[in-house]
Image (cartoon, rainbow, N blue to C red; front, side, top):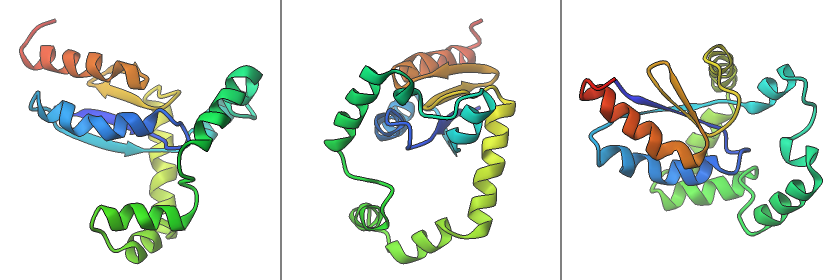
Length: 152
């Protein structure tokens, strides 16, 4: 059994989780299933027409300031630099990411997320158990390890 990592980089706390999940899981011998999805449709289904950070003005102001300290991952040039630093050729990856087939997979993944009760990102699923938030990664890994060891 693997741990499912449900992430959406529009949710800023998915990034720190993404940067540490592989090493944290590998230290426990746990395989990670990466599950990208879009939060926008899920939020709309919950009746939200804006980011939760904009619904609380002081939190929104903090998030915009926090984001100003990072790179804008919505721009292809930034993604290209990231891919190059990871040893990947950017053009084929960016082309594949923008394809209709990739977009359809992402929509289907979002529908699966909603069916599985995912409401925010990052989220981790271990079997039927849901853990939400970057600060819950260790709890999800411990839950997984306990299940593997046959503990209730």
